[in-house]
Image 1 (tube, rainbow, N blue to C red):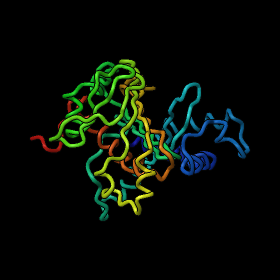
Image 2: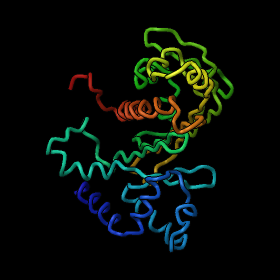
Image 3: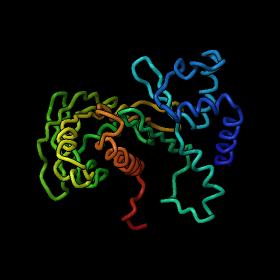
Image 4: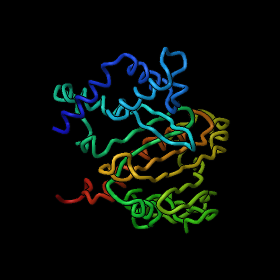
Amino acid sequence: MAAVAEMDAIFRALADPSRRELLDRLGARGGQTVRELGEGLDMSRQAVSKHLAVLESALLVTVVRRGRKKLHYLDPVPLQDLTGRWTGRYGHHRPAARPRRRQTPEGMVMDKAEFVYVIYIQTTAEQLYQALTDPESIKIYMGGYGPDSTWEAGAPVRWKMDPDGDFEEVGQRVLEADPGKRLSYTWHTLQPMHRQMFDFASDEEWEKAVQERSKVAFDIEPAEEPEMGIKLTLTHDGFDSPDSRMLEGVSGGWVVILSTLKTLLEGGKFLDEPA
């Protein structure tokens, strides 16, 4: 019945042309405020806010707070799930069974020169922060790669590029470390192994790309609804352009990593584990 209720909420949200217009605008450019979304529309800001609240409750819109601003992003996953309900049995093979949307309403966006991902995990803020900084946990959800640090502001973040190799100093530093609330650090630049992986056309293009230095932040807060657990917002930004090769690489990687982190914290089984 819960799945039916979620489907009904989506249909109700999409029935209004003004809400469809807002979704179109977010599809064209994510990370907009209420004021930006209302520009050029024959609607008051209050009306825009009400429509956005309906879209958010239907899990079609994800909200990320940046200081005093509320930025809105389109979450296409519920629509994909909805169409898959009828089209999936006719030759469309989906990767793996997804948990129910009410339990894991994640939102992803690659807009401008940033990547934002929101996921809800049934855990505590303290346990989530610990998993982000604990070497044994990192080894699991990062697949043997990943960072190592004392996790104090200003401390170096060493990185393992090869599961069988050693941690290396690649110029990363912890920017913020507030247990249970926020962790942020600078990201490594493109490494020699990435040149062939991304097929750079020229030495000039490669030399420019390796100068890019981005950063990643994990913001931890209670979910809007208590039963949804803890809300984790990952923001990876500081890229030179939306065409950044590093942005292209981390966007897919973070989705897998955070999904595995969620499985780890919620006590689920991994694909290579016996049933």
